[in-house]
Amino acid sequence: MTSSWEDIINELKRGSISALARFITRVENREQGWLEAMMTIYPDTGKARVIGITGSPGAGKSTITDRLTRKLVDDGNEVGIIAVDPSSPFSGGALLGDRLRMREISLLKGVFVRSMATRGALGGLSLAARDVVKIMDVFGKDIIIIETVGVGQDEVEVVKSADVVIVVCVPGMGDGIQAIKAGIMEIADIFVVNKADREGADQVVMDIEGMLDLSAEQPLQKIPVLKTAATTGDGIEELVTILLENFESQKKEAGWQEAMVKEEILGLLEKEIARHVRRRWTETGEMEVVVKQVLERKRDPYSVVQEMTASFIH
Amino acid sequence: MTSSWEDIINELKRGSISALARFITRVENREQGWLEAMMTIYPDTGKARVIGITGSPGAGKSTITDRLTRKLVDDGNEVGIIAVDPSSPFSGGALLGDRLRMREISLLKGVFVRSMATRGALGGLSLAARDVVKIMDVFGKDIIIIETVGVGQDEVEVVKSADVVIVVCVPGMGDGIQAIKAGIMEIADIFVVNKADREGADQVVMDIEGMLDLSAEQPLQKIPVLKTAATTGDGIEELVTILLENFESQKKEAGWQEAMVKEEILGLLEKEIARHVRRRWTETGEMEVVVKQVLERKRDPYSVVQEMTASFIH
Image 1 (cartoon, one colour):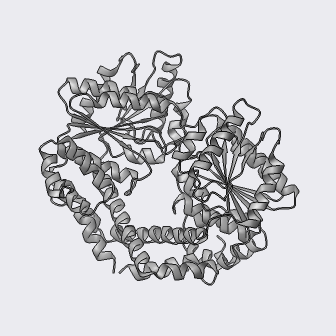
Image 2 (cartoon, rainbow over the protein chains, first blue to last red; image 1 turned 30 degrees about the vertical axis):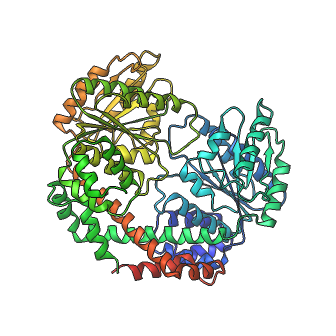
């Protein structure tokens, strides 16, 4: 017998790790009652602080996550990690090391790691990650780290809802210039130049600072650019200090929270409406008739869509 | 003064390249009247053959596209190319060479190249690519090649609507095993092992054939695995021969066309409904009130969504 939502919610609040994992899976799968379950827990959310970590593959994001997590746990925090898997499965062997590292860290007391693939996130990756943040929050995690493997548009969407976004760069990858294109400058609250023992690290720092100066709409807002060498741990203490300051001061621009909530509601709404529309069309069998007409070019998909939109919406 | 849709459609049908470019831009931007314009041209679609090319970055996809295009043009075909840019801007310098190659080929008579980025495709990348295919088709292109730079889930969605899908692999990247994960085995109509002069090419061919044998639900359907060396042109003739055979025989499984049309209609429908919902919420100012309540935790996003879904949908 599968547990009721009520049971899982109670177990979740009591700190059951198994309930945490099952709750997330059910919500990801949009199992019957997920919306009501999220409604029930929502009033208990809003306590955890969320860190987003993104940057190019191979920049050392997961080593930074590892170091950061150990430090935060040592300081008495419960940490949740959401590892957003790449949409591209062709990224190669580097990931294996990341996975092993994640597995190791998931064994630490007070740490819970959840992987999230692009495929299969029924609600869309960004919305799904926000759901998971809330569930981990209610479970009692103090700090939640969302780490992306890649740095595409999807990943930017995922991390931008975090309280603090760390963008990781490394020397020798031309990241400086690329970051602007990615729409990443706009979401970064902290830049980290990792592998700072490598040649060119100072140049990368200067490039980033130069771009920040150029793009600064609010010249008073200073975005820190830190150097780290995550494998040795250099710079991690300083990163944690800056993170904590950032949590305190909430440096995000005015209206950021409102924009995030608005986006979340609209995203959820669109997905829900789409789900209804899909179901109704499939149930009535109307679809089969229309598809046949379109294939015979007696009708076109665009006028079908226009009619359907009018008929579905008040 | 901007031209009317009617003018652009007439110019498009008369073979104006400028009209082709402008038509695509307007549809991509969802400019007023785009739906009606697509309705108007739809009856003239369905003549062009569509080739999808995907595979890991660095596998030589754009060199294959280049060779293939030159051969097809030599044989008297008008060719349209849709180059789907990567969602990740961190892919590095390899792309520059691709871009230059594309530029060169776009200068050939009878060739039209259109780049398409993940960002900014208002209708979603896969739907947007299908629109562009139709527009190029009406313009008079005989063959349309959709080439993706990466090979993530988005790219799979984009190419799977093509009449023939070519998946490009190379020796030494462990692509064999990765391809299964990508959901690519299911959409490939032809496998190409490029850079076949490299060590390990035969092994990759054997790996792919082995996987095809294992995964074959219809053991009678033989998916060709070709070796090419696109830089020298080896194997391209054979690839073209197989492509033409494939166009003739339409080897896709039964119901494939229906599934593609169904997906397209549902995709368009969801986007259109979402657009309406977004606009209405923003216009009424209702959104501001609700967002405030959610931030104060007097309401939760999930019940808001449930109420809104009920109120929007008949």
